[in-house]
Length: 348
View 1 (cartoon, rainbow, N blue to C red):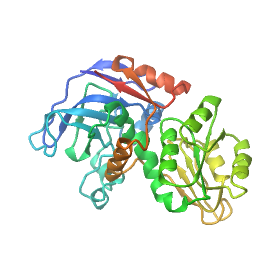
View 2 (cartoon, one colour):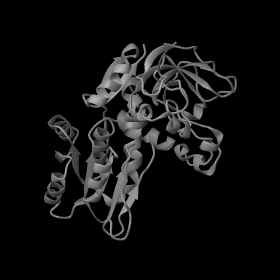
View 3 (tube, helix red, strand yellow):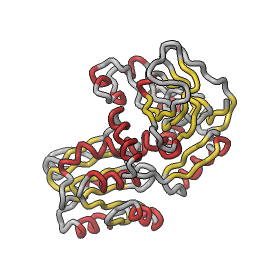
View 4 (tube, rainbow, N blue to C red):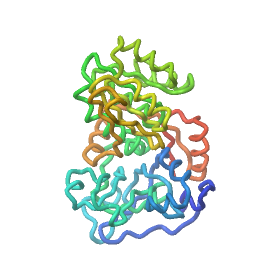
């Protein structure tokens, strides 16, 4: 089968022919229908070999942790799905047995690192291939009529901001303001989720007139350039109150610093992006009782909820599709910031 493989540190991924995996035990083999491309893939390909080793990521690696497929084969112990079922893949694989996994939050599994369990495309072989081997049927969620191209990005680009936003919802009452920094694959869905789930004012920050216009299309009440001028802009549109929550979808130091200057007492800063930035926490660094979090991915129950939101038309994903043979160009486009929403690779 064809697969997009990252094989050499510092070199771009290439299409390679590798054997089709055979499911054993409770594994499920999917024929991939769609696979989303994410900045986390770019993050992996930017790391030196020693960091990859520390993260448990070996090369060569088939990329892709946003996957949707049709069941093609079942291991002898696999149950709960049938040949031909169309399913979305929950990527935050855990042991399935610890207390945390029992809540559905397998992305925070207490034993995954010890057991060497890694997500597809981020340690295990991923979905940018003609076939994907899923370790257990419990990680598969029915599409129930959703278009696979739309569903694939929902498994991360929607699930991750949904998981980040849900705990803050009690604070996002009428009169409050949420700021979203970064209007790309995750950010454009974060804006929609905030509009759908709360009555807060939504402010989007990014660079470039095209991204700011995109933010307004997605429902942002205001869109400003992501630099120091945004601080006074947010102060003005909030009547001096500043933001109740800031969702930093980028996560580099300039955006983390910007986030820390936009909040008020008892606010929340949620660092979602996989960057190298940090928000200092101390008595004199932030307004009193400000919460700073760095959540990861989302839970299995939340993926069911996200798919339901898409099914109802409450949220939608801006996608651009690519053939598997052209998949490597996705990351060139991503690096050049010329993708409007989410890039989706369609192997067939």
